[in-house]
Length: 204
Image (cartoon, rainbow, N blue to C red):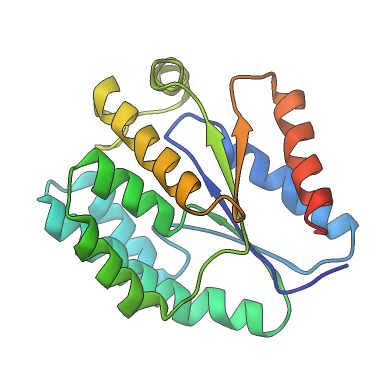
């Protein structure tokens, strides 16, 4: 059983990634791993407070990006890095790929600025494995309508989420070793089977 893995779950709102984190955590625990589940924005007291602002307070794209990376810095320093240092497997619901997809592709914010912020905040920290739950924007919208009261991102139109999907597609193409595409259109048990297959292939 390998240790100190950093695994991220990515995808647009409604893609179902959060549902499968619980199952992955259980699967890893059965295989002897110490598992830390966390999320972004969030994962620490400060980052969770910033999350509330990001999800509900109106702001421009630059402010949005700066808050995301401020929350990420606290998360990396106080939660992710300590867990990895002691050999835990960290499962994170979104990480920097989401910023490039949402703020970059979705909002049209400068990717060069995001890259600079990524370097400052993470000092080279990247996931070992990223599971990208790929789902058409219109299907995700139908799922979100049935799930919960929407935050300000979830209220964005289908065109926004199509751009976000394009952003994820570009990130996956740029790092095909780290990224694994999960077909989130399939039935839940078929999605779960894809996830387990990837974990087994990567020796998790």
